[in-house]
Image (spheres, rainbow, N blue to C red):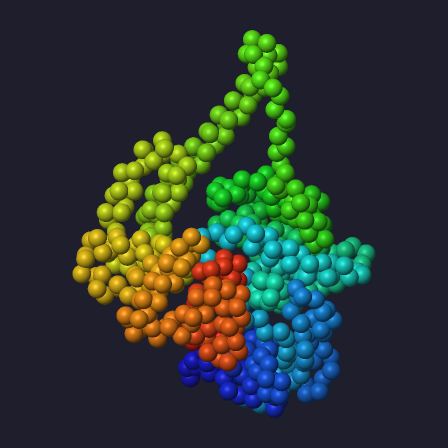
Length: 532
């Protein structure tokens, strides 16, 4: 007999579990359990429930129940902003006639850190966002590491970090404590389990301690900053021998040209140090390092007081030496920038060969050219050939992706204009979106926001489709009060009107980048009518 995925699930949408939890949505599952979004029919509040696939072999067996509920018992023990909270635990009779264990925990509508990271598309996650998230996970993890004896998570990875939102912005919460274990108080080690790409070398010796959690968090830190793993696993041979951990990680700015901070890099590399003795030993040590970096990151260079001018022939010899040394530093810096730009241009050439990255190649060329005229002269022909080879359909596709995935209205307008230049007849088909995005570009410009609001109002008056989408919130937009708009959008979410919420929040994002950072990830699902 063939079963569909929905038939294989333990619970069906609409089922009332134990008379008070209505199953609303399947959120995901693994080898041992499934997670659903539910609504408490009495409290009218949403939760997530984790249901174990294994049925209880002996009804009423306290030892079996307790074994399966270890994770729930552990999570219920902690009450911390950065740890998912458990509220209830119970058993139920499944459709298979067997008893299953489940527990009820916080529902985090933002999804996990992996989803959050992917929502930025081709862009890097902003540094301040990364630092904020890593700090929050340090705070949650420190609760475990501060236990006597310490407890370790053993499976830190983006999929086990939930991302929600509150009045202060993004809230990161540790979850999936199924592998948590108290370390042996004598050796301070526990047996190693978890996800391979995030495991420290100690796992090869079948042991973990609190510093191995830091290694996993450090890998996550590196990945968020660079979109790459520090120790990539390239082959089965790597897995069999553990040789991937002997590779030397690339500097952060090898992948992310926006980062040129030696202190930040040293901090990340200390977290992913393969020698556990040289690594931060627990969450508090990494947190202290981050906070120290934050205090000192803007005062790396202290300029000396400039003395009155001295005639060149009266300058002491060491002044000439200093000038020469400064020139050497400037030359080295210029050489670094040139090499970086050259590498970016070569990467752009490779991107142009990849169908999935084709649309980003010209952006990569442009970025390289901005930093180095010599590189521009060398590779300009490559960019010209690339742009001339783009079919119109790719420009249209690129415009839609730039806006829908990245909220990059400027790029959407630019791609549309390049498509229209090749095939003017397309403008009639896409003109409504084109003019809408042009008004958004103006609204995002603080110097032209009134002009943009006027353009959008006029567009809504002439285009019934735009009026249906945005007409109802134009007066709210005219207030230019982004916080008020955010509040109104969330009221629509509470009333289960996500599409209207998305329109207001989209306009609020144009006025306030902090709102954009908090909600851009959720906007896509709201536009589809989904409250996740």
